Image (cartoon, rainbow, N blue to C red; front, side, top):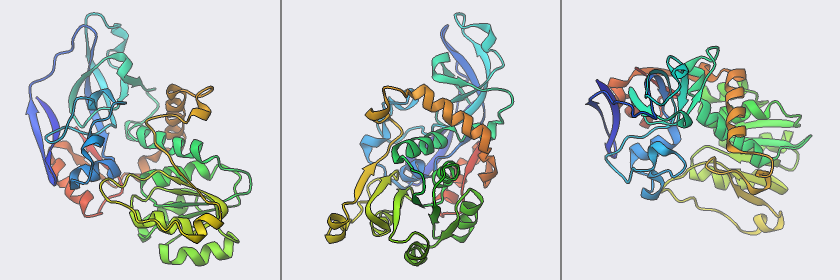
Length: 331
C-alpha cells in the first residue's frame, strides 16, 4: 500500500492509504526512504497561515495541481527506484534518487523530475538538498565581501546551513541572532562567532561590529525580526530577506534611520535566479552546488526527530509546539 501525508485543513493532518501506483512507460516508481519536513513552509500550511496563492508552486511539478486543502505537500524526498516504465533505461532500476515530492511512500516520476544521487551520499544528508539550495541562493543574493561584518537572524535549518556557507568566506565577524539557547549552540557549531538573543544583539554588534552589520540575512520567519534587523545595520548596510511570513504582516519602521543610512532591503527566493547571474548560472548549476554542500557539511547531524510516516500528525503537533529542529519521516 501507498501511504501519503494529507493536509486536511489547519492543524489537521492524516495519512491516507492508497493503491500502489503503476508507472507509465515514461516513468519511474520510487520507494521513499525518508523525507524531511520544511519547518517554515509546512509550518505555515499546518497553522493555516499560508496564502492560498502560495500553496500552488509552479516551479515544482508535484505541487502544480494543488489548489488548497485537502492536499499533499512537501518537497524533500529521497528514495530508491523500484520499477521502471517500458521506455525508461533499465539502468535506473535500484538507483538512489532525490525528488521535490510530497511525503509519500511510493510515487511515480519521470527521470527528468528526479536527481540521481551517488551511493556515497547518505539519504539523511540528501533530504537537506532543498534547504541547502535556499542557503546557496541566499548567499548568492547576499554577495558577502572580504572583511564585512555579517549577521544572520534565525538559527533554524536554513539559518544554520547559511551560517555553514558564510563561515567559509573571509568575513570579519559572523553573528547569529536567535532566541533559543539550544539553537544558539547549534549556530556556533555551524560557524557563527557568537549567537545571542535578540535583546543582547545591539550590545554585541556595538562592541564587535563597530557601527553595525554590513550585511544581514533575515531567515527567522518572525515578522518582528525584520524590523529589528534594520536597526542592526550600519550606513548603507544590506538586508537580505529569506523568511516566509505567510499571512503575518511585518510592521516596518522605515523612518529617519532607514533613509539617512541609505539601507537596502532585498528579497531572496529560491524559485528563481537573480537576473544578474543568469548569464552564468542555471538552476542545475545551483542544484549541483546544493548537492556538493550537503555532501561536504553532512547536515544530518541537525535531525532532531525521526518519525515513522504513519505518525505524521504527531510530527506536525511537535513542530507547532516549537519542539523540533528538523523532523524526518521514515518509511
